[in-house]
Length: 174
Image (cartoon, helix red, strand yellow):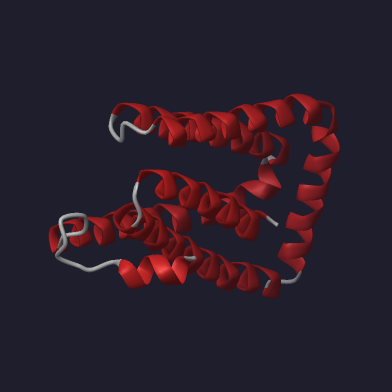
């Protein structure tokens, strides 16, 4: 699917101008910077406050999804994307509600992992290398979604975008 989307994109078309490409790359650089910075802070915070990190990660993830949904509704005028993102946020909060009694065990496991990582620094190196691959994967899928929105028309665009969201979510989370 991504091959056909990327193959159909032509820089300079009304959908994807070189000016848009420059802004797109600039936004990607900013996202990469913040991802690396927050990833490094997460490594540090795992030892100091694991339970707070778990709760904050779940809540921030839901808040960011709701923010993206609002952005989709207001600026993108896309009801389908907004609804999908709200469903993901609601699912995230529902999972938190179901797992709230298990957070002590999860925090203990996270702290244990952080202690093991401190004893074996190669695990940190491996995590950084894999984080670089994940960043590359996210950049690739971002280009695919831009390509999907510029190549296909309304019905196909929505269906293929939903497929791409689930495909990316599955490959990056599982």
